[in-house]
Amino acid sequence: MNAESNTAILYITDNGFALAKKLNSLDPNAKVFKFKPDKVSKFWVKHKNFIFIMASGIVVRTIAPLIKNKKTDPAVVVLDEKGEYAISLLSGHLGGANKIVREIAGFLGSQAVVTTASDVNNLPAIDLWAIENHLVIEDWNLLPQVTTKFLNKGNLKVYSDIVISMPTGFQAIDNPESADIIITNKNGLFTRSPASEGKPIHPFIQLYLRPKNLVIGIGCNSGTSADEIESSVRNTLTKNNLSFLSIHSIATIDRKGKEPGIVEFAKKYNFKIITFRPDELNSVKGIQKSESAFKATGAKAVAEPAALLASGSNNVLVPKQKVGNVTVAVAELRSEHRAKNTEQRQKGKLYIVGTGPGGIAHITPYAQNAIRKSDVIVGYSTYLDLIQGLIKDKEIRKR
Image: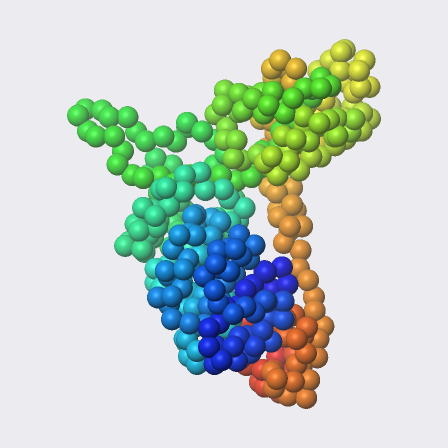
């Protein structure tokens, strides 16, 4: 729970209300409501976290018609009125319910109840690991089967053509044909072996995780529609056996950075648009000059040099392809560019707060919220010992 989490706490009885107020001190940004089924349905798409203080049966019957998709459903947590148990009921991984119940249990001194198999077996959740490493799951329907195999065997064979740190239970291999998980931006290269000599086709279920490491260089005529741009990009990637899911960003000349078709296409898929001046594009060596592009923009070329500059690569993965009104080139992010980009997205935040004269009750709501949102706590040991319920399950550095 945090300032952006938009948490709703719902209660029925007076005892439930007392516990709700206590939890509200843990998350001052949470909204407390008297429980009504129609209120839950009204707020379902507005809140990211729901904490119900009541019988789990009531909660199950209330939310059952509202559940749609594990990728979009909010986190649902259930507590008994005494706060002895905090149960992760829905969206334990992607929604963050497991994390929330552990925070609540640490705060109340209660028991966190988590039933997701990966947590129970102390194995990493594949979907969370993928998200944390900026990998896109290509086929979510295969995830349960691969997860079941992981739980049964305790390990998975993983092929990756990018450098990535593997979690516990992931065994890196060099042969993609034998892999349970394949991490690549390529299509059609690591398919199952065809039947031969009467043997069946490779029986493995293989889950593809797509790294976001393709930069698409785009040049286009003014007024080109977003649909035509998208179609040109998709066709180029398909012809070159590359995954659309691996697109990291769009690169183009500065005057095209606000071209409606490019902007609409980028916004549709949340792609960043990176632009360069003509002199920057012209500084790239070995690019074939386009007289029409030079006459229109002052740049010798757009798609290829833009892709190279944005990716930090020395060579394009796909040379420029002219498709109708659109020119497309593809480059792959160099590892240091990818690492730098990831580091920027994971930029941390430092809070400096006081813990009061002693005990959680004496800490201001803002300070409690800052401590709760932090992953690492640094402080004087005597004072940290007084707020164990607030810092449980965090990395502690005592001074």
